[in-house]
Image (tube, rainbow, N blue to C red; front, top):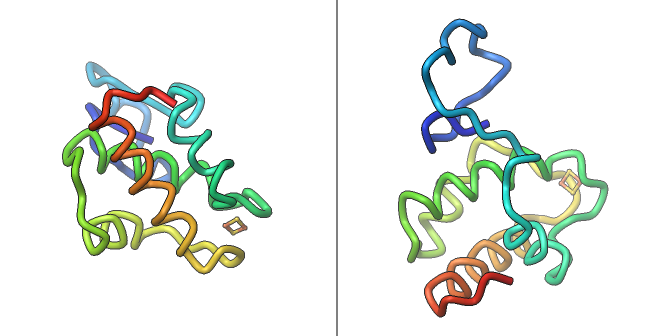
Length: 105
Ligand code: FES
């Protein structure tokens, strides 16, 4: 989840630690990043997808123009057994580019 816009492992936090902070889960993300994942085939079984989406959203909030290495670093805490990460990195980069162009999709 995002805690005040920063990715954190929700399973390692106690509820009271989130008091007074803005919490965003994958359900609170807009459709832009998930749509980019779908369009580029970055979702297969979907097991990793919520964590990857939240980590990517946290990256794009902090850095709207990430280099590929920065995307890979931001996603390093997530393991995807299906995609090999190439399409995931492409989807995050595509979403970043769309946001810079002002395209919300
Ligand atoms: Fe299956 Fe990532 S899509 S683990």
